[in-house]
Image 1: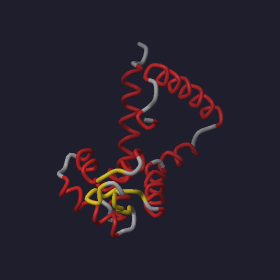
Image 2: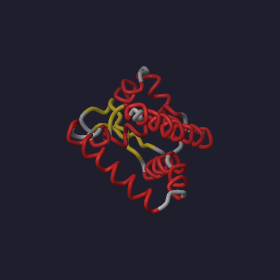
Image 3: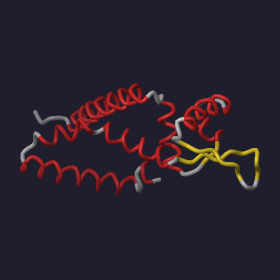
Image 4: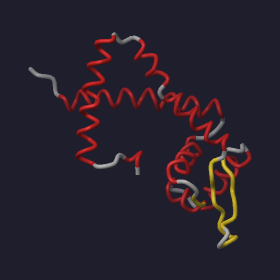
Length: 151
């Protein structure tokens, strides 16, 4: 009986997500920056400057809750709040250089396990995996347009 590709891919995704999320949670705990705060940093990174209410909406919390969450990030110098020149009541949020470095470290941590795994592969295995993954990437790109990360 031929293996079910759908189940195999799902198992691969579950395994890789589980390992990556575990490392992000560990990084979050060690750095004392909560997962919602990391989520806010990622949101600001992906979409550029935004305001408190947008972060609240994206995280599913009130603007007051988002403001409290973001206040700690300002204290840690991960983000900066600036006034909107058109409306001083609106505060714009931007990543600082320290925030960008923090996110970069978080991303690196999330796939460090994978770099260790790749080290165990032979050159032939690496070539085979690259070929198959490039085919999958091309199929997904053709069928769905831009990925979520590119939007």
